[in-house]
Image (cartoon, rainbow, N blue to C red):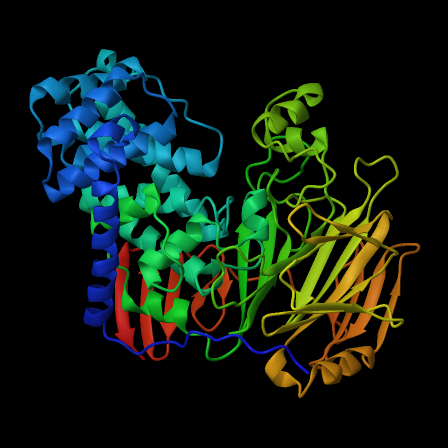
Length: 589
């Protein structure tokens, strides 16, 4: 018998006005949360978000002053992560306070020198907020700024970077792409620009980027959880997909994830952005399965690569029961990459590890020096200071130059060819404690069920099971030539568990590990997949066309590489973001 199915949220048919009203209610509740979360005894814990919320609502002036006195008594810290909460409060009402407060607040931008950072999200935060602060004091000379540049120079530098970054994103994709954690710090600076930039063109660009990022998230989200391959996420997020900033945004934007507050979602609430209805429809309608492809880029490489931005080919299969997605493998993002993932729907994802994936836990100065400027003999130790899991053999995040992944529909082949002498020369598979079942038999297949996702996992090399501290199971395979074939299917496609397992066992499958890991597999849909490490995989004898991979392609999003355009589609509705002409066009086909 199959395990009892989960209850799925169904897409709703509502008008833009009805959606905006529901969104407004969630937005108001978030603002009230930040306005009321601290009593006078706890004002010392208050942040600029709490100040902004009280100023926005026009309440408790005495409390606001007490919070500000505490904030001004402490030296700023956090670099660009100080800059954007400050700007939220500044536009929330700090700029209307008496000079006793505005003057020392303004002077912080002279006495405190925030580090610009070294990642895509750092620079988006830094330059968006510098742009806005320079706009507020357009005539201030160089000596009144931490940078030693005048307001005009600061604004020009910030604008130049922001326009170049938007152009890069809309032609060859993001570098910190589809991150369930760092999505928040791309939405936050764009929301601030959307609401507070005085230049109409910059405001419009920011609105278009908000639509762009939210659409990118919506199409790969299932009940508010960001599925598929990701550039960056943390250990606790990779095993519990609801524990992410993306899920917090999903609650605010779409109302289809558990409530959880965050400062970045507060920013979106304060700034007044209301997503177009078409994004809500895309995020919540899983009535029909679909395949979605995306083209992204690696973070800027500074060494050990012939390409500054290597391509990232993403493939996602979406159903109401699960989201199954991947990238092609390799070192696509340092430290926190997730190459492939299966996430299944559950009634309530809080506390649930509703995911399955595998990786080679690679760690090397080769990766560190590819993306960071530090010396070879220091870079790994420096990375591990802040990302403590990076050099651990038991880590659950990271890319590997010795991993090659290929997906077609609901089937995936992952191959590993790890050279002798490589640190951590093994493959780890994550099998959740929350799987409804997990079985093995003489066929070599491992069968499992998570929610309504039926899973078949075929390891190419011997393995053993190791139970993790929180109850999850690690498939540990200490073999350098390795891999797996994975087939997923919805429970509704089979009359019973036995029917599924029998169907998988009957599928033609040949695998090997010498001289290179390889597999030939006929999927449940009848497609014949062949993959050999180091070669281009094929589907029914045709090589996968990576050269023709689109920027976005699926039923909801379409864009060609280099186009600077994104067509958002739902039913007959169209919303086109055209960065060439700086226009948003809506139509009914």
